[in-house]
Image 1 (cartoon, rainbow over the protein chains, first blue to last red):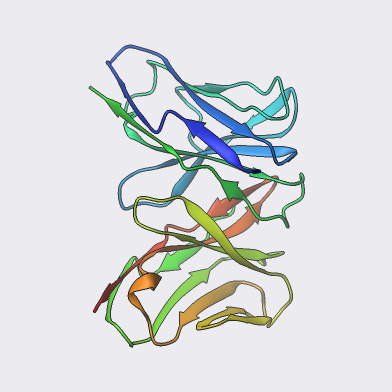
Image 2: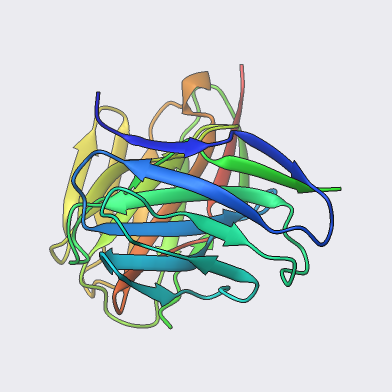
Length: 114
Length: 109
């Protein structure tokens, strides 16, 4: 059963702690993306990667870091430098590097900073 | 970077009424995509429009791409409670896609 998985579904952290959100896909997609969604708002791009070992900053990359060591995996680390990290985080992938391919989204991780 | 403006932000309709959401860009788009996000869920791809003036239909949903490829609309005929959710348009921006702010649709039975 192919798709994108994100874990955990809910995550709580204390201020000052780094936390890593997992994103795995078995769709053999080249491109992967991380978005942040705040209540009642749209999707804002954090980072994206079009190929293994390469990634680019999106609009709101400050306070976040990513890695792309494997095609299947694109973990996102929310660092203590992120001032307002409480949000819904969505990972997505698409088949190629072009801009004509649909994005497949994972179920998301809801992060709450206590 | 490329921005797509989407209106309205919210729309509340009575079941059976029609609904339309609009996306506008200041620049010509190579394509535009539409997604639906159910409450508590994640965005799901609905359709992609590529050609100038293109119109596509999916049952009660009609998608249009403007002649100048700067605007697009999604129209739902005779809404049902299953149509509830937020509808997003998305357009290319250099090497990534940028999403509109979304239109949140609520339907009163």
